[in-house]
Length: 164
Image (cartoon, rainbow, N blue to C red; front, top):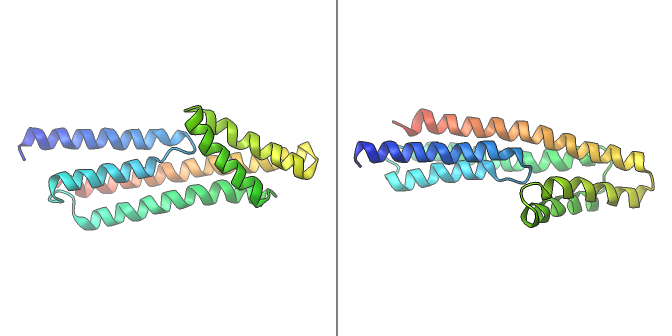
């Protein structure tokens, strides 16, 4: 592959990874998956000559961890605050539907709103319902920090070994 084409491919890969990283501000956004896909596509195009297969394995494991930590922290903090599993499931579904129906902020508004309404209907106490909702929001914040750190690590792993 000519040098200019290889350089262009590397720059494009970094840009896609940056979109994945900074898009994680949105809770439902699959940023770690986008970063992983950019590394995979780069490897497929270059024949894994510049990207060793074991580096892709490490990036894949980080992507799986980022996806799991996202769901565990968001739902876990709400559950820890006292939310029912039905309310958590409803909130996550509302977040997903809201993201697609009213991008980019639909999911951000829909998930905590539905969680609050479901918990208020269950508990008949607005303060308790709000406390549970704050648990979900805290989980979102922690999830963002964890996913962002994992995304940075994925990019660093690719940058260190992917450009050789």
